[in-house]
Length: 69
Image (spheres, rainbow, N blue to C red):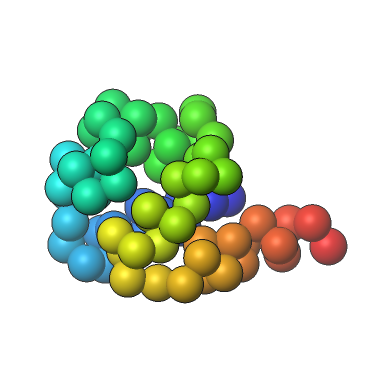
């Protein structure tokens, strides 16, 4: 799930949900909902998350692709 991937990457960078939300341009409460898979990441948010976390978009989508197979 993309939310779990975002949470793992964020924690690995010792970044708070509030910090990530500021970088992405969304509220901390939405970051929390995304990480708990209660809200989907919008297509136009993917590049913002990737940039904020310093990873390619493909890394955010890797676990999603595994679930498709």
